[in-house]
Image 1 (cartoon, rainbow, N blue to C red):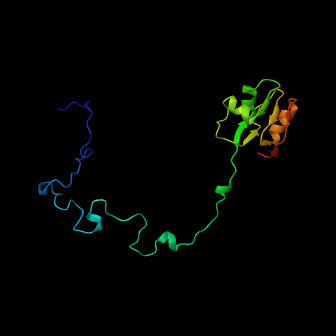
Image 2 (image 1 turned 30 degrees about the vertical axis):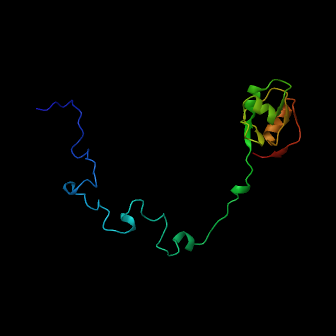
Image 3 (image 1 turned 60 degrees about the vertical axis):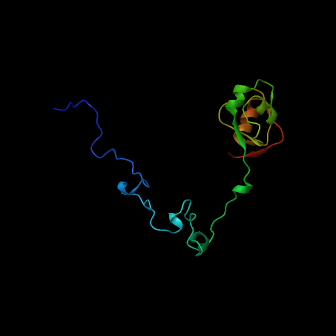
Length: 154
């Protein structure tokens, strides 16, 4: 009797790889399952995706719909108040340069927006591109100031 504790794959789970182009005895010699002649039988042959034999392809027959403003989108690097609380001392200025110097932002990010997640207890001077209304209120409540910015609901 066979040992029931030996692990074995069930019958039919493991299939032998189908090797083509290795002679008639393999059953897939000769044209190697590519049929006789033609573009698709050649090495590197075949047509590109969407090609319909010269007929205008479907993606060109259908009308273009919709609009995307992604090219003109302005992206801001968002920084929350909890990071300012963690990395800045009382009386410091928060600007793009200081955020990069402290490692909060990467150098490639250009526009900065301050968001109001977290609490702020330090008196900071904020000089960034945008700040949310909640963050502005929190900074002013802590005794700090916000210099030249655009306020936005976020």
